[in-house]
Length: 366
Image (cartoon, rainbow, N blue to C red; front, side, top):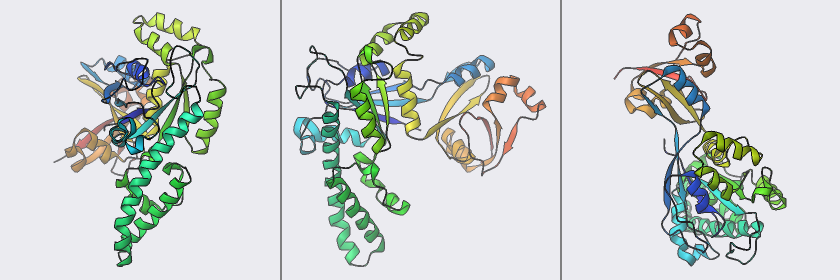
């Protein structure tokens, strides 16, 4: 299951520096706007202590962690929705992502210029929001023109879409993001899903601060937290420059000492990847064996046959049953034989809802 998060923000807020910390694919980081033109894509491992523990028990030949794709999208500017600063291209890159990591500069540094001449993350957020809203408004109005004629001709489905588009339009014109509109039915949301609205995507606000503002942030971050709470979004505090230094340390003990000096238990990058994974309502189940221990990504609420289908479509088609071991039981008993003897091996059918951390083996017949 592919997960792709797009890093967005104004130029020179720390996006590419953060991307470099997240990925081995190095984006150019420079002290001038538009140093990123084409989107850089990095495939990043999701930190998961459970995978390491299972590996220590099973001692497999191969280990496969869950991954996410992070896309470093060039800095947006005012007027991007009308094509300013290669805006149409950049907005198109955002459209292909599943979620947005919105980086906001929450630090002062005279040596790093700001595209608008001063540091104000509230203003920066509003600029990005406005550009995304204007692009969404364009998409909604184009769809509305098409379905209104069909609705007048008696098409009931078109009428539902038209009603949804009218509500989206009114909401966006108020300067509000589509994700905060709560007036649509589940059916209308499904019918309008192909609009792929930018401001409907889940968002995590990443406040880039200086080292002295770690770990809790500063006055700018507090204001962003208030705005994020209004739209049900989360906020993360990170110091991109410090993360860059951490990324260069190969010795584990040195990293731990550096993090301790910053008042952190784990790197901001690790927290960010986990938060991005959780933001899309994803969970992990494991397959454990001598040949391989692997983490599989599924959507929370998936039933056993659909989870099996993530491995191979034949597993879902010919699903018979799932043998399930809870992660804690695997750690406690150590081997499948001991787990079976303790009566801790569950045999589940097609209606079983997979839980985060389940260790599974599927029986199927095609």
